[in-house]
Amino acid sequence: MITTSEFKRGLVIQIDGAPCLILDVTFQSPTARGSNTMVKTKYRNLLTSQVLEKTFRSGDKVEDADFERHKGQFLYADGGKGIFMDLQTYEQFEQGEDNFTLLAPYLLEGTEVTLGLFQGEMINVDLPMTVELIITETAPAMKNATATAQTKEALLETGMRLQVPPYLEAGEKIKVDTRDARFISRA
Image (cartoon, rainbow, N blue to C red; front, side, top):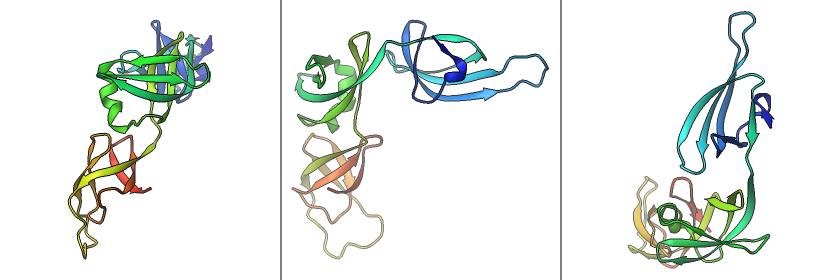
């Protein structure tokens, strides 16, 4: 059991039988004497991906979720599903089609990821902050490109389309931010 005084961002607790990742926590002292401090939390249900809010009283106890993070690796895509392997136990897990379509543009075979396991079952996959991908198709590089913010569309090896600076050419390796699908730099 975990008390509300131990709450912090990134902690996984169990609410209503589901693992929940705390996104934000604030402690609020009431103005009335004798009242308990209120602990307001914003959390993501890891099974449904819903972001919810809940208020606890100071001293309340919640269950610790049977949740573990393991290093993993993307093996291959099978139809619309993704197959991942736990690098500690070498056990393979399947990611459903609806969640995998969001991850697929960033994944090449062998990409290292973090697997979220709840009661021995994989429930989420965390991508690295950046991935390196090769541009397979783009308009030719522009000579004398100005310093203004011009971009052109590029097709990457995973099928993702992305806006890149005009000086890049096909065959170049670039770094892509996985949080907002944007070009960072050449690799």
